[in-house]
Every structure is written in C-alpha cells, then in structure tokens.
Amino acid sequence: MVVHQLADREVDRIFRALADTTRRDIFERVIGHGLSVSSLANEYEMSFAAVQKHVSVLERASLVTKERQGREQIVHGNVPTLRRATALLEAFEGIWIGRTTRIAEILGEKGSEA
Amino acid sequence: MTVISTVTDPEALNLTVMAEFAASPQRVWQVWEDPRQLERWWGPPSYPATFTRHDFAVGGESRYYMTGPQGDTSRGYWRMALIDEPNRLEFANGLAGDDGEPRPDLEPMAASVTFEPIDGGTRMIAFTKFVDEAQMKILIDMGMSEGMTLAVSQIDALL
Image 1 (cartoon, rainbow over the protein chains, first blue to last red):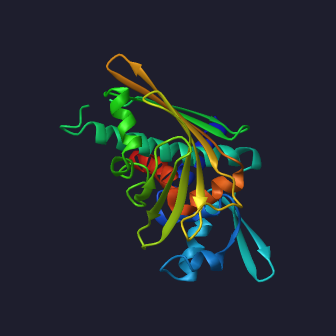
Image 2 (image 1 turned 45 degrees about the horizontal axis):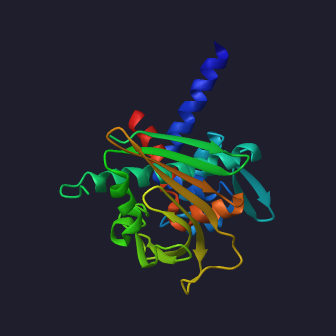
C-alpha cells in the first residue's frame, strides 16, 4: 500500500514536472549529455534564476540530477544507461507516429486516390 | 483509420513502425516518391522538410533541409539502395553539413520500408537501424524531438 502511494506521488511529480514546455525542453536537452545551468539559461529568454527553478522542479521529480563542477552546476538527464537507448528510441517512435499520422492525412485528401 | 504498432530494440538500436492506410500500396508509394508529398510529412510541423533533390532510383540521392521556428536549418541526405515499386525500398539516411553534402564523419542510418497489400489498404512497415546513441542524440538535437513532445503532450491531456 505504502509503496503504491509513494509511487503515485512520484508519478504525479513527474507528470507535473513535464507539463511545462520549458521543462520538457530542458529534460530533452540533457538526456544524452550533461549541460551546465548557465548554458541552459542561454537557450531561453528568461533569467538564470527562472531556469534554475525549472531545473529544481525536474530534480525533485528525479528526472535530472545536478553535479557540481568547479563553479558550474552540470545537469544530467537521470536516465540509467540501460534505459537511455530505450528513451532515445521512444523519441524516434514519436517522430514516426507523427510521420504516419501526416501520411494518413495526405492519403485522406479528396482527389488523392490513385 | 491508421493502426500503428511499434517495436523498439534497445540492444540492437533499431525501431520498427507498422501503420495501415486505407489506400493502395501504389498510392502510399507515391508519398515517398513524390518530393512534394514527401516534404509534407517527413519533418514535423515545427521543422518542415524541403527536398532540393530526390533522385528516386537505385544509387540515386536526395538532399533535404529542415527549417526550424527560428529559421535554423539542419540538413540531411538519402542514398537509395533498393527500389522495388510498390513493395519495398531501402536507403541510407544521413546527416549533411552546411554545404548540404553528406558528412563523411558520420555513418548514416539504414532504413527499409515495405508496403504490403491488406484488405482495404496497405500495411507499411518502416525499419530504422541506428548506428549508436551519439547519432541518435544528434538527430534529436536537430529538431526532430517532436516525438517526445508529442508523447508528453498526451500526458498533458490526462492532467
């Protein structure tokens, strides 16, 4: 029971963390390789502090980890190595679902029957 | 209605996507052969593809670029290895440099697509074999990350 409740809370945190476009984008960027908070901040039209806040939300959801390297904080996607390939393949899976959906739209056009 | 199933093999780094269309194999073949139709679906709406060359013959090559929301472009190419109309095609799909020409330092993905006639339409099976995780990461960074966003937007709908 307790295990389930904890799991639900964790899933809830993950969903909330990924409900935001910027956080999704940050998560995608750090899946394959770590990036510093400052280099992430350069990618968005928002303050360093705002980006840092987004990173903290992702961190609380265990989607990323932070590692201190000198003055920099490096953000890593928290995807175990064994699961990383799966995550990458799932991204491509989504690309192909998008493609087949668009093909179906093209084929559904009036006057397009061969 | 498009029925889709996908199989991912993380150990072999390949992806198989099956989709069914209510159109003949010949008609589905056209969306690959005709560059004007191809560019309407190859890239996501946020990164539409433009094919500047599409030599749809064995040994023939294609050149394309994808344009992002900030006007940024990423370039790629195809090299056709097999064309068996309207049953099967095989090609290499690689990244191109700023000059639009294939980057020799990066091995291309191997892709094959089969078109099987089924009752009332066509089953299309697209197979992609990736080289390594680094290549996959580059491709996702190239603005092809629609996939994950799409999947997550489905999660959004549940909230």
